[in-house]
Every structure is written in C-alpha cells, then in structure tokens.
Image 1 (cartoon, rainbow, N blue to C red):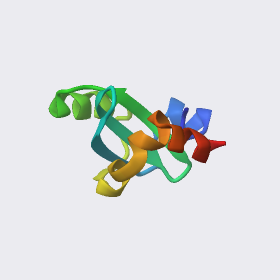
Image 2 (cartoon, rainbow, N blue to C red):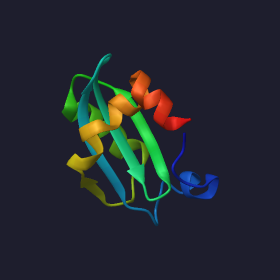
Image 3 (spheres, one colour):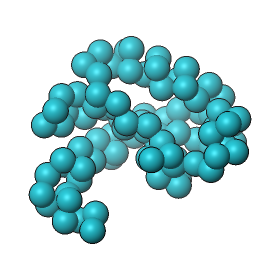
Length: 88
C-alpha cells in the first residue's frame, strides 16, 4: 500500500505532494494520506497531532496538504461491505 514508487519512498517522497485527512472509522480515528498514485499512509491514532507528526517524520520532504475530501468516505471504502464490493 505505497502510493509511490520504491525510489520515491527511499528518498522520502521528495518530489511528491501528500494530501492527508483524518476520519472516524468503525475501528477508531484514522489518518489517511495519499499521493496522486494512491494511498501512502494509513494509521489508526486517536491523537491527531501525534498522527500528523508521525506522517511528517516518515515522509520528511514533500509538502503536506489537508484534504477533507479524503476523509468523507475513505474509511467506509475499506471497512464496509459496500466498500469491499467497490474495490473488487
């Protein structure tokens, strides 16, 4: 589940922009981050400040943009039957 190539991951996503958002899921609060290529980071964490610090420490160089659109339906795409059918 890396929304970047191995080389981009190795250089910390230097040439990428990472959109991120927080959402509630059936399993707790989640941070979802993605590039134009797909999801690059998804972690459950009730502390949004800590979750964002962790994301920024994992990918240290790209710009990070809050994107509320990611959170609108993202967790349900992964964690519900409707979402599971959608991904097939």
